[in-house]
Each structure stands twice: as C-alpha cells, then as structure tokens.
Image (cartoon, rainbow, N blue to C red):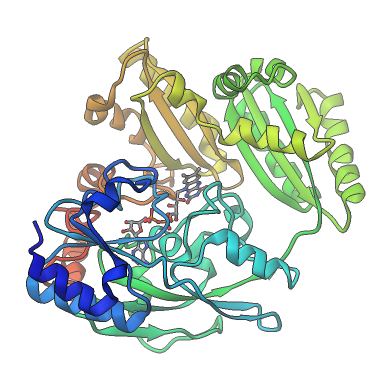
Amino acid sequence: VISSFDVAALAAIVGSGNVEHRAALAARDPGVDQENLGADVRVRPADTAEVAAVLRYCNERGIPVVPHGGRTGLSGGARSHRGGIVLSVERLDAIESLDPLSRTAVVGAGVTLARLAEAAGAHALSVGTDLGARDSATLGGMVSTNAGGIGAFRHGTVRERVLGLEAVLADGSIVSELGRVLKRNEGYGVERLLIGAEGTLGVITRVSLALVAADGPGATALVAVDSLVQAVSVADRLRRSTNATAIELMSGNHAAAVCRSLGYTDLAPMAAHPWLLLLEVGADDATAAESALVGFLEPLLEDATVADAAIAQNASQRDAMWRVREDWAVDRERPGGLWFDVSVPLSELSHYVDVVQTRVSAHDPTLGVYIIGHLGDGNLHVTINAPTPITERYATIAPLVTEGLAECGGSWSAEHGIGIEKKSTLERLAGATKQRLMRALKDVYDPNGILNPGKVVPG
Ligand SMILES: Cc1cc2nc3c(=O)[nH]c(=O)nc-3n(C[C@H](O)[C@H](O)[C@H](O)COP(=O)(O)OP(=O)(O)OC[C@H]3O[C@@H](n4cnc5c(N)ncnc54)[C@H](O)[C@@H]3O)c2cc1C
C-alpha cells in the first residue's frame, strides 16, 4: 500500500483535487475491465511537466504506474493493483492544432476519438480510424494499443496515422518528436516504439496525426451470404467498384443472438444464413451512395452470390444494423467465454475458419464458436463459449485458434494488444530473439520496471 507520505508528495505535484483515493475509485466506473481501478490512488496530471514529475517521483520510490486513457482496452492492459498508482491522461485533453492544409492534428493524449473526429469533420476531414468505443477511447490509448477498427482496411492501423509523439519515460525524461510531416528520417524512431507498447515503455502525452479526407454521406446494407468464400468475394468486389467505407462480418449465430436479445424480428430471418456482412459506401450525396449500393448488390442477388440484402432507409435502421454487428449479446447469453483477436490473409480466411471450427468441435462438441470482425482487413474476433463459463480452459483452447496463423501469414494478436490476457500466448509463440529484444528494450526505457509491470513484456 502506498504511504500517506507518497500520496502527499503526489498531491504536491498535481494538486490534491487531482488525487483520487480508493473510496472514490470504488465509486467510479472501472471501464471494460473490473480490475482497472485496483490501485491505491489515481492521479491526473495537467500537462507533460506534471506527468514527468509524477514519473520521476515514482521511479525513485519504486512505485508501479499504470497509464490510463479511456479504459476501453480489451486485453487487461489497464488493470492496476494495490501498492501502485493509476496515471490518467484525461486532463491532457487539448486539440492543440488542426491544420486543414497539411491535414494534421496535434492533440493531448487524453482527447477522445469522438472529439477529434468532430473537430476534423468541421473541415471535411476524418481521423481515418473509427471504433465502437469512440466516445471514451483516447488518442493516447489508441496509439498505445495500435488500434485498428473499421477503417483500417483503407487507412491502416493507428501506427500509420501517427506522424509524431511526445512521451515521458519512466525516469521523467521527455522524448518530443512532434513533427507534422510524413517524411522524416532523423535516426532511430525511438518514440515510435511506444506505438503498441501499451504503457510499458513510457506515457504518451501528445500525438501528431495525419488526417484524411472525410467521406461523403453513406449508405448501409446488411447482406447475407452462405459461405465465407462468397463473403470474401463480395468484399473484394465492393472495394473494386465503390468507395467502400465499412466491410464488417458476423457469423449467423452471433447475429441471431443479437436479434433474439434486442427483439429485432425483421432482421432475424437474415441471421438464419451462416454469414452476414455489414457494408457501407460513401458518395457525394446520400442518393448517390444508395444507388451505388443498389447497383452493386443487384447483380450479386441475381447470380446468387448474395442470398439476401437489406438497405437501411433511415438512421434507426442503420443503427439497428450496426447493433447487430457490435452488440455483445453472445456474452450475455453465455458469459465466461474466451475471446480471440486474430488476423488472417483474405485468401486464407475461409480455410482458417473451417479448420478452427473442426478443431473446436473435435475437442469438445459442446463448445460454440461465434465470429465477428473487420472483414476488409481479415481481422476476426472469435468467441468460444459453452453453457457454463470456460475461462479457466484458456491454455487448452487457445492453441485451437492460434495454430497455423503464423504459417499462413496471419497474426494471433491483431488489434487489441497483448495486455495481460495474451502474454502467455506471446511467451509461447514469439521467437526467442524477439523476446530477448523486448526485455532489453524494456530495460532501456524503464530500468526499474515501474511502468505497467507484468504486462506485455515476456517474463
Ligand atoms: C465497444 C468497443 C469496441 C471496440 N472496438 C475496437 C476496434 O474496432 N478496434 C480496436 O483496435 N479496438 C477496439 N476496442 C478496444 C479499445 O477501444 C482500444 O484498445 C483503444 O485503443 C483503447 O483506448 P483507451 O483510451 O480506452 O485505452 P485504455 O483502455 O485506457 O488503455 C489501453 C492500454 O494503453 C495504455 N495507455 C493508455 N493511455 C496511455 C498513454 N497515454 N500512454 C501510455 N500508455 C497508455 C494502458 O496502460 C493500457 O495498457 C473496442 C473496445 C470497446 C469497448
């Protein structure tokens, strides 16, 4: 437990109003993971200098520090424990510059994705990244997890959007590489190692981002297909012939669970098909977007590549279609399942899913396999569950999903980071040289091991 002496020292840095104790933390929403707010205190520095002073103090005193953004991370990377502090960047929330001509933004790490998207939208620009947790997820957290999301198939993951970073290392020293240009080669990209480091190498305080042109108004369709081969073909053809802005995938059993749970009787018949796609295209105006989508789908319905399709006629129908993709009814129906986040080259996707389904049912026929994902870039979220919780079976079930991914050019950890949940998989699957380099880098950036201890870095 942190001493009152330490709490007073931290309060002297950030102001006592910006130090929250356990009682206050217990009353606060922990976010996605119930263990996020397990620390003794949460401190909220106002700027980079205060972040540096907090880290310098904690480094000298050997106090563990867990950086927090919006607490929407899905790999347990923000969990914190007694004896340590949470360092929240929520007060670093300034959109410092938004330059429409160079299409760049420089923001504090605590700015949420939704806020930056709105500010960029006022200049007909977009962040180029979108995800369901947009109202809470912060740019600092998204850089730290190298988030992917809905637009990654067009604009890359957050790594590709980052032009520069400012961050504070464990000893309080500051690395500031906040350029706003694409081409910049000034020695090792030491700051870029923090992208995807999940708070284990430093605390990101400011981010410089490349923006993209905003899409015009969109049209949305829910489409049923009878095989994954057809789903991949639809995705490919959509990208070739329209300005596709979303290509999302759901297995029929996932969609059926959502329709049951939310009472979507009109969409339920589509969920009887094995796979559903949520497709969006953008155009100069809504009518043009809808006719592009109709023109795309008609021949596919005629030649039976697509079994069924519905185009949203208004905002509430569009919202319902997105709920079918994003709702977590499966976890409410059968809590205690296991969640995997993998990437597969599109040419291998159908074969991979067949093999996983066969392996899982051979292992235990009572297990259910539910799949959603960002089909445009081959990123699948696979839930495996049973009528009773199976969380303690992770070590035996994980290989059923991860085996063969490296060989086909895929990844066993796509967009949600390693955190604590995938650390054992990293120790199992990452090569010895990579694990040695990761430990060596951790020692350089954080020699006393105070930053997010126990996460990501192999033991
Ligand atoms: C409904 C929902 C939908 C989602 N959809 C997607 C999706 O489509 N694609 C996707 O990639 N993710 C998705 N996510 C996961 C999540 O939104 C992302 O991982 C996001 O990037 C986390 O941002 P955050 O600010 O909430 O970070 P947090 O959860 O607060 O932290 C995540 C990790 O980053 C570290 N961290 C946070 N801020 C900093 C900082 N300033 N400096 C250093 N380290 C820091 C933390 O220590 C932790 O390890 C989704 C989550 C939810 C709940």
